[in-house]
Amino acid sequence: MTGTTAPTSSILQPAGIRRRVVFWRHGRTSWNAAGRFQGQSDIPLDDVGQLQVARAASLLAGKLTATAGESHISIASSDLARALDTAQALGGLTGAAVSVDPRLRETFGGAWEGLTFEEIEQRYPAEVKLWQLDEPHVRAGGGETRVEVAERMVAAILAAVATVPDGGTLVVATHGGAARVGLAKLLGLPEHLWRTLSGLSNCHWSVVEQAQPSVAGAGEWHWRLTEHNVGTLPEPYEVPEDFSVPVED
Image 1: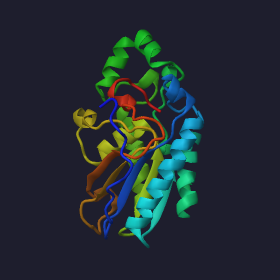
Image 2: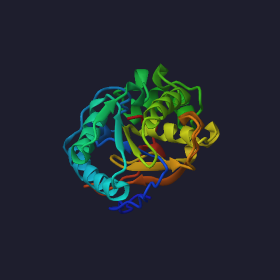
Image 3: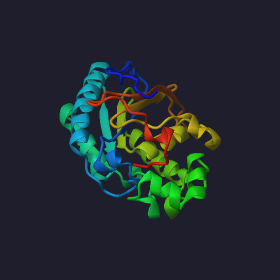
């Protein structure tokens, strides 16, 4: 996929009476550019990341308002600055308030945070190999497991989307690793298939919609994937880190 041109438009369809959730990854940081594992370290957007956010927020806002019309738009964000600044850019364009939930943070990476991918592979070769295979109970640098991250992500998303009316959209501004496993769990994929989903490029998003309207609680709703890794970048397309390295950012 290296060298592929990034899409400049989205195929978002009107939500109708179905609720929709957009998983949106934050813009680039200096640690992304340097190939460092960020985890829950609070690293701000760099200059490129700020440009990415401005462009992607404009595109996403246009698509949301064009397809949602008068329908409700909610925004929930990780409390880490790189995600919160991304969310607030969209809030400024749509008029939607941003709610903050620490459960939408990236994986806590313990001793791996701040290390380059090469350093992690040199110091923790066995753990990294299992981590890359999405072994459910391997802890990143002694921190969180994939399963723990997915569980808190889905809990936060279900709590937020339960307040969204029929036909409304919840945008979740979050992080690469957390978005991937949260999306996989929300879709009901078994853990051994989580690697079938790629990670998201900076400021790209994925969309799921309610499979059918339901009067049951949010925990009983079923979801289907309608878009994955869609967006626009001011720089040439780069392969998401999750294709090749164990980054959580």
